Length: 336
Image (cartoon, rainbow, N blue to C red):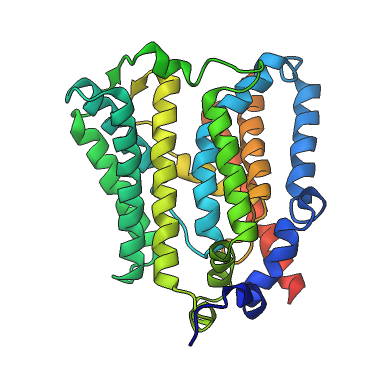
């Protein structure tokens, strides 16, 4: 069967066809309308609850804190749209951070080279996830759960569980110095990557292939899509973004810690699902993920301002995930 007519993918795959209009049509006015309204309502609630919420410093703090989660969620969007899941992103982030710290402090590498190596380590972990899922036929849940344990273990083995502290000022300033009084270098990188991700899913055949695989991997294969290659690539990119998130978090903390990223996989999945993606695959958008990331960021920030315990915050996030999945189930039932 010919593989040249890839523009036909969205028309062949029901899952992809369902997702096109809400994912990209009018953004906030269609598939992202719910998350956008939810974010607005959340901001109103915290504005009323605490006078410290709607201040310039606090809003910029939310933006800065959203960078790491935003990178993880961007990769997770592609994976979930494809019908997969990645539980290893938090552990891969920690491994990348420790790789950066060890290479720069112990091996004597330049910080910039250590950072590139850290991102490459994240990509290697993602590649291993993809190969495990496609060639050994491991379920995504099991393959990425195993990688979560392996990566977290390696992060601790590198320095026997000890943190590495102290990086050059120029490195730390990339996450601190603001341009136009708003954007740091890390924030600008995140914005560029989200624009690239949006354009790829919207205009490229490879992006539409992700929706097709999420709708039905077998139908996508019959349509001429290389399902294995696309799956491996999606997980590898997710790993690269997790590695970059590890580098950015190291900048922010001015240290490499093997315990960082614990629980980040929960927030990442929550952001993507709250943004309108379906855990069944075939539905989701970068636009929705932006709102999902901001909702998680605003929710945690607002609860912190109100003095809510971090343990209670985990309960709140869990409830939000359950509600988002319930709404997705109801939406899919109505569409049948």
